[in-house]
Length: 68
Image 1 (cartoon, rainbow, N blue to C red):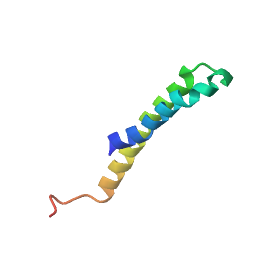
Image 2: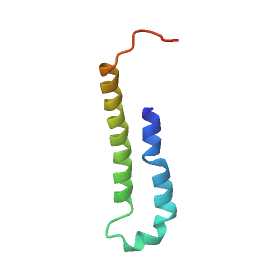
Image 3: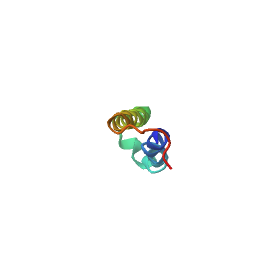
C-alpha cells in the first residue's frame, strides 16, 4: 500500500508536468526544477502519511494470527 500511495501521488503528475507543462514553462516565475521538487517532496509526504495511518489502524484493530 505504501508503494501504491507513492506512485499515485506522483507518477502521472510528473508525466503531465513535463508533457503539458511545457506550454507554461515560459510563464512560470520560477525555474522548472522548483515545482518538480515540490512534487517529489509530496510523494514522500503522502507515502509517510499512509504509513502512519496504517500503523494507527493496525494498533486500533490488531489481528490475532492468520484468519481463513
